[in-house]
Amino acid sequence: MSEFASAFLYPPFPFLLLLIVGMGLRRYTRFHRAGRRAELLAIIILVLSVVPLTAKLALLPALRSVARWHGGVQVGAVVAPTAGAFEDIDGKWRPSFRSIQRVGLAVAMREELGVPFLISGGSLREDGSSEARIVAESLGIAPDQVWLDETAQDTHENARALAAKLRELRVNCVLIVTSLPHMPRMAASMRANGLKVYAMSVPSPEIEQFSWWDLVPSSRGLGLSRTASQVYGGLLLYMLRGWILPSDLISRA
Image (cartoon, rainbow, N blue to C red):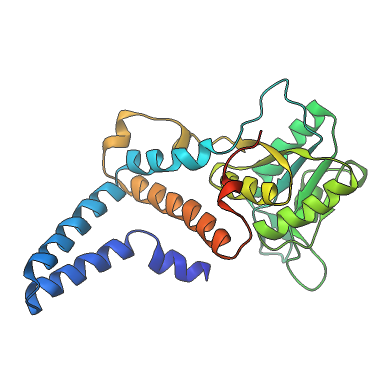
């Protein structure tokens, strides 16, 4: 499903399809005016989709829906979802760079706050290897310093497994540490499981920082547009599946 979405649902394919439909309507049917309007709309959207500023502004509402952690805020635990792993040339599984970023930052926050630490990331293959265990071992995190969820296969399952453990620990307010584009969906999924959420993201200057270059159409702009589509597409999919409600998109912190 993710490969299908990447190819056909995210920019630029839908806009190119609209352009082709408009050209067909204008040339081969009597709906010439509708075809010209579809062509013009497709061209405008295509241009906007390659301007970095467009995607950055589109992302602001989703990113601002999550309360950011700041000094003085009390949380009962630090949690980090993993972000993939890969098998190297020697057949050994290693954490992805994004997993290392997330968990490395979470380790620093756990040491600062002195609260329970949880990592969630499911099995990779039948021998029991999991993203959670692989990244913990890679970063040298002692088993007695962290609780590992090795079952979750997606953000929904991350949140359910983490929430179950947090209820055992009598924790209802957590700090999630994840990548910036993943933050809205992870926060909403945690809220759907009855938790109060603060978040800290891995630094993402390509999204958070603005400059005059953001007005220049580029491949970077198209990449950011795809990121924005993935953020909102993921939230919409979770709502359609009943995993989150619109109210879960609003910060309760």
